[in-house]
Amino acid sequence: MTTAGPVAAGPSYRIIQPQVHHGRGVYETICRANGYDPDKGRVPGVFGLAEWSALLARFGAGQRVAVVGAGCAERVIGVALALRTDHPPSAQPRSWHETIGDLSLAGHEPHGRWLYGVEKAVHPEFQGRGVGKALYEAQFRLVARLRLRGIYAGGMLKGYERYRNQMSVLEYAGRVMRGELFDPTVSVQLRRGFKARAVLENYAWDPEAQHTGMLIVWEAPRRGEPSTPERRVQPR
Image 1: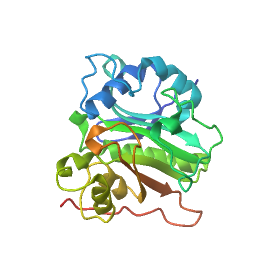
Image 2: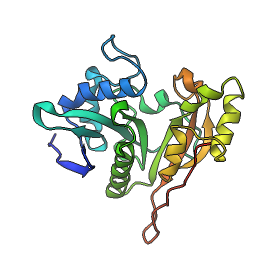
Image 3: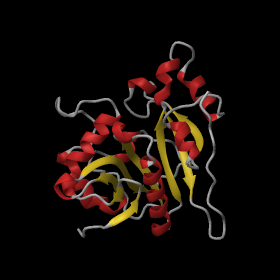
Image 4: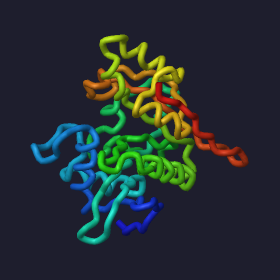
């Protein structure tokens, strides 16, 4: 596998295609972003060293990380993992595990026409610096380069924890879709140009979100059409 150079740059970080040695940093970033301690044993469902080499061999060109520093001081601070699939977002929804196959991304279809967002995480110390936006932009460029139809994913309703004693997760999801409530994951994704299509119950293990996600879809603009503008969703 060839070594990729920088894909994009931010004020103090670079977005690059990851290599095998980034595996530990990827694991730590995903853990920290989700409130897990990476030093207290393997966290189930988080991409670790055991799967990392196989994942890169399967679809290394589709992965992106944000890094700071260089050489021995290089540190992963953001992660965007993806696979290609021919299962369109308009078809019967599948769970996260059904779509990825396993943590080596066995569900990847090399000629799939859609990019499926498997994982996105930014280390808490670097949130609010545009890292997540830069990772999305890198994926949008990847879709254009591969001439795919777009990106879709299941955005976990991480903000539901604050409202669980006030409403059901389905009511919460509906209010997020209508822009009445701000969700720290899904509302931000809608700002990036994604459209909310459906609620995904039992989508992935996440007690905070009651295991519920939102099907979000970004369709690549057709030739001659402008890119989808960002949708502003203001916190309430």
